Image (cartoon, rainbow, N blue to C red; front, top):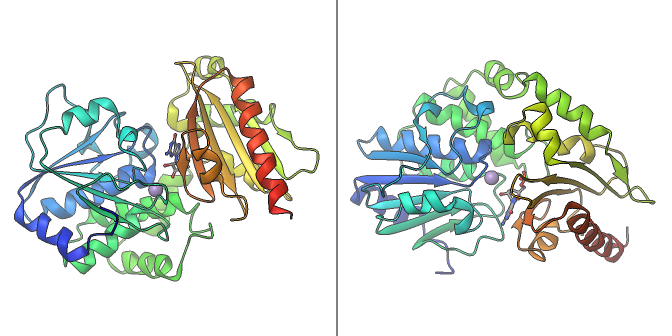
Amino acid sequence: MSENSTFDQIGDLLRRHQSFVILSHVRPDGDAIGSQIALGFALEAVGKSVRLINEDGLPDNLAFMAGSDRIETPPADPVDCEVVIALDTATKPRLGDAALHAASAGKVWINIDHHVSNPRYGDFNYIDSTSPATGQILYELITALDLPCPAETRDAIYVAVSTDTGSFQYPSTTAKTYEMAAELIKRGLDVGKINELIYDNHPFRRVELMRALLNTLERSADGRVAWWQMLDQTRVDLELRPEDSEGLIDIVRAIRGVQVAVFFEELPDGKIRVSMRSKDRRVDVCKIGQEFGGGGHALAAGIRMKGPLEEAKALVLAAIDRSVKAANF
Ligand code: 5GP
Ligand code: MN
């Protein structure tokens, strides 16, 4: 299905069915977990039965979120459910094998996302690549359908949108985003408290990781591309968790003159995770990611690719160099 379903069509499905499994992507971030909690609690408030499943479970940095104890790792057997809702997940495999198995009894698939590269793998799809976060789409859906917005939903939408916009800073942030944030505050959101929990609450090991990464920082000769890297041994030495590196790439992105920031991470299975940020749509990192089987957004994208690290780096940096040269800044 290439067209978006309407909110009314999605609302009709939500009304007609009783049991839902809500999924989000592997290595979940604030938008993934926030979206699951937001929609899950809104549906429960109208009497639906809901399971919130994530391949990798709840990351430690989001355990402060009200309702986060409802995020489960996939049970071994398929969950009895009518409808599966995939949120914030650019491709079906990014939901994870175990999560896909747990959701395999679902008859109808709804896919709600903001990734431009999403191939519309649901029976019903709502992909809005102009939205800065899946959480913002869900706020629009919930208000359009007049669904309840309990405190868990309200706070989760704020976390989803704040984390995916770099605290309302990225160019994807729109007037609607700020209007929505204002409405959430009017609905009782404690903005100081929630920001403290999101941003001023890092484990010390994350700062140690920052120190290790800074030692590896490199720049292209013209200063337009900057990158750093993390060996798997660093994860072992510092006892890191996957979420510890979340958002650190913004330090590289914030360097004057840098158009593209890249983070190369060696994974325990030998694959390389690449995280890219661009400051200008002329260098579309989603397109660069797609050259290597990854994807995301024009200004923020990722890849999981074959190692070893030095080979992956050479390939990706060469592709970025071509794109920066073509942009002709
Ligand atoms: P991050 O760099 O924060 O991990 O990801 C940036 C964006 O790219 C996110 O929207 C994320 O969903 C997407 N992304 C990250 N890694 C991958 C990947 O391996 N494949 C695809 N298709 N998208 C990715
Ligand atoms: Mn997102």
